[in-house]
Image (cartoon, rainbow, N blue to C red):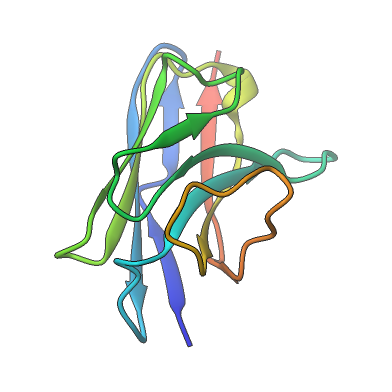
Length: 124
């Protein structure tokens, strides 16, 4: 079983940056694709970004493309989400997700593992 724990959330002003980390334990996720999702108050959870097992392929939601970067360090069993040029509409709980596939998942692929989430709040 894989446990995912997110770190790095907090309060930041618009235009600022945050780096989220997702540390995996229980087993290595080096052969798993990984992703980030978010859920704003009163809204459904939405996809943010995903990455294949090696980090060679990534995919982003249009709303974050060019501002967010997903990456991974398989030696550390950790996935990152660098968030730049943050906007108030980026305010949400951010969740790390793991897929038991090595290729880049499609939108139809449901994650197999979820973290507990970390709050990101962007003030105007």
